[in-house]
Image 1 (tube, helix red, strand yellow):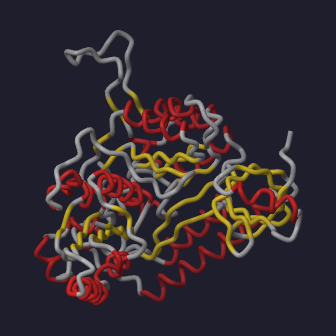
Image 2 (cartoon, one colour):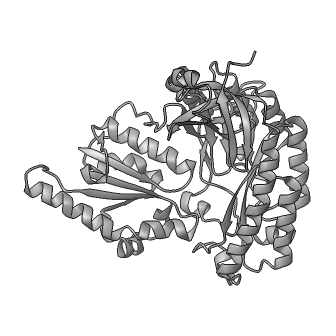
Image 3 (cartoon, helix red, strand yellow):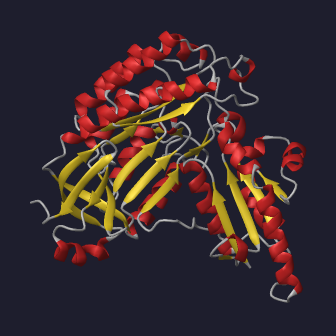
Length: 452
């Protein structure tokens, strides 16, 4: 029996898919080369925006065709089972009847929190001794630290889709990180819907559940330090933090952790205080800028990205201009800009979506142009430097990778040709690169001798 997983959405969904794959392989399934050769199709869905859901709702014809292909193989004696299709992920917050009406070819609707029930749906015993994730990368791994979110941003479907925040035991996280570091992984991402609100009971608890003398809660800064203390050559990154929970203790922990990659995504969502209040984001732009200043003071070379929504209901041109001014002032290295789309069940969905689609597109374009300018300006400082780069892949003769600040670097195949050929085996490993050119969305360089 063979399986194929299609993943939509963020790193949390990718991590969930790796755990689904781990369970399937533990109970005897093998990974299929493509959808047509699979006996089991799993679609791990995203519900963060309407466009993400539309991609899934548009699958009906393809799913019908895949079932027909599988039926033909069965008649020809090449298969002895029917194709089973499962939908999981964030879209399972909708009533099953509603989903079945829109997606009649789906056989099973399985909330990700019910992953342990997957084996039962496949009429297979749950594996004794548990299972390990099947990581899609040989050098990058996503380590969930929590599931769900306790915030109630008015536009966000995550609390409805994933439920209240449930922290993962700290020892379990550390053990996974230790195993990954020992097996040679070079980039470990700590992920959660609100990663920096992580807090669990300490390890110092006796058999009766009483805290031992001197024991304190394990919060995210302490967790970051624990992962940093693990032996190994790897970078630590995390996502997605909330500005409200970003403490001075966390900034200090980032600055003191030599394995922490100097990159941070710090979602702002809007540059206007009134819009932030409507979004139920409990901070002001002044507080956000103060936080950025603190971070840059202790980690001057940090690369900063953000998330922002344009066209939130009632957003005036003047309020949008405040977001544009924030972009010009902060000078982000990257930004994930989305046009507002109402999410059924959220408070914002009850407000009239009164910013025209064309206006949203224009506002996105304005921010993108500012970002392009500031990102290029920020990247200029890397020219001439020798950067340690984690090579991810080879594409069209170019080696592509990331530096510690998560900047994408293309390594020119026409320079240092002998060294490039020698280093082709370095994919998924680290190399030294001299940066020769700055681009808006990355850097270009050439392989060189390791800096001393």
